[in-house]
Image (cartoon, rainbow, N blue to C red; front, side, top):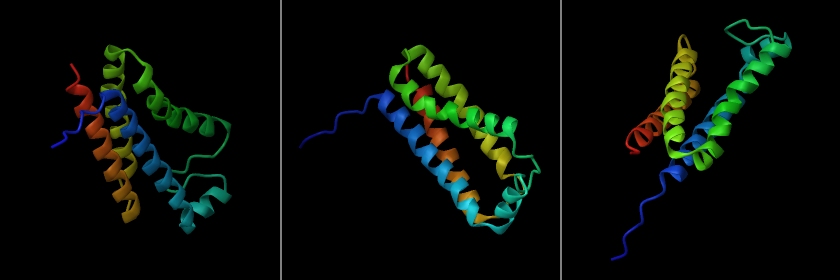
Amino acid sequence: VARDEPLDRRLVLSSLWISMLFVFVYVDLFAFYRADVIEAALAGEVAGVGFTVGQTFLALVTLYVLVPSLMVVGCLLLPRRYNRLANLVLATVYALTIVGATVGETWVYFMVGSGVELVLLGVVVRVAHRWR
């Protein structure tokens, strides 16, 4: 009986960040099927929170998305010590921001997507924590 070889933790962590980003992007993309989101976007605002869409907002959102995007490659290239620390800290921070974004949300697709993102980030923390 052939046994599967254990996957390299770097590949596992990178794959988890990729999966989280896919869910993250699709949840945001699906929002544009909502009338309230489209109307707010056309008015130059973010629905529900009232942020004005401008240079500063878009720059900050880009930075927010760049961090997990760069973790995909960071998991493969960073030395183990920094890799582990970055995964523990960043997955926790992003999990907190996702929880914050779901406060007051009533759309099921958003809550399901956010729940999956939280599970994936929880697995990131678990894998990184067990990486000695």
